[in-house]
Length: 431
Image (cartoon, rainbow, N blue to C red; front, top):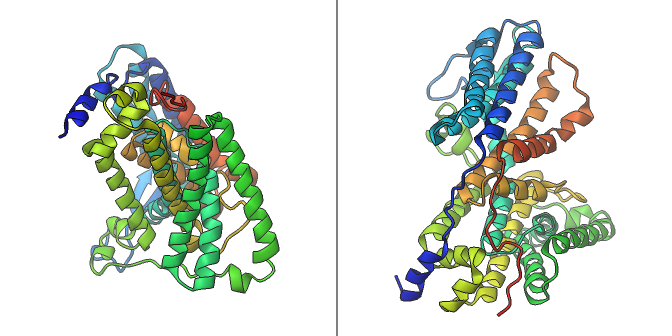
């Protein structure tokens, strides 16, 4: 390690994991447990048990449908997190108990809600594998958008423009892939479009020191207006010529794709799914095990100290904004050439903001943000599940559309508690 890199090690004087009030977390976990308990005991449907399907008949190993009694689910998924949350709120507790309570609340809330929905009538079977597979597929743009946020914000620039990066990339990847007839060209077009929005963010926030929150909103509105105009004036007039791109198809790996649960989740997805996994792993490795990552974290925490040991703060921030924009562009490309196969006006529908919430929920770490993005996408999968099997209580369709955003707000505001952003995040740097 070079001398300047060694000196940068001392710059992160604040530890990555910061203490948060356990009382608030405990109360939140207890409330989730009590809510699940109330749903399963007082609000369950006519069924005494719900079938949980884990495999298909053509899998290498066939797993029989698990019949989960509703009362047993109430104990496991409702009472347990309620008790753990109560203990956490009532007395000082070790970190492992806090993590256990959060895990019990999250898993219990998810599975408890599934069992409650499946209790609508006798004989209902919920395809757990299909639900999880759909969740991972829907999580890809959120995960990539979250990586764009992590890269930018760890170097000190608030990336509220993820929405614009995704939307611009979705438009240009669809158009370029259609005109060129090439998925590779469409993917490159998305990367460049996202990087251009990242460049605008860098120029105005670093060079002209515009308020980064306001700038992010303005960039998003600019991209929305631009893509809406081009969509209506170009794409809609000749969709066959400008809005009919090829789509990355799912790749079923022999043998591995037939493994129960794991096969459909990880070995029967399209190329962009695997690319998202690579981006997450590379981001983590580079951020914590490379000179670039060391300097990025130092610039995000204490830019003046980094400057004194030779790090060019604004140049590094500018470069990271371009990288973050390209990753956000990759997320947008997935929406068109990775899934839907066409562009629609304002099709991101707030996904960039949810990705930013995942960054906060994940405490500005690649793996944490990834897990948060998966959790948020699960809410969308639940919405689809409820529209298919129904629920013991009639839920308006408008509320189902709101569900992913409601879950995002509740989790970020309730479970996370007080989180600490990089110290210099959003603060312009001048020598």
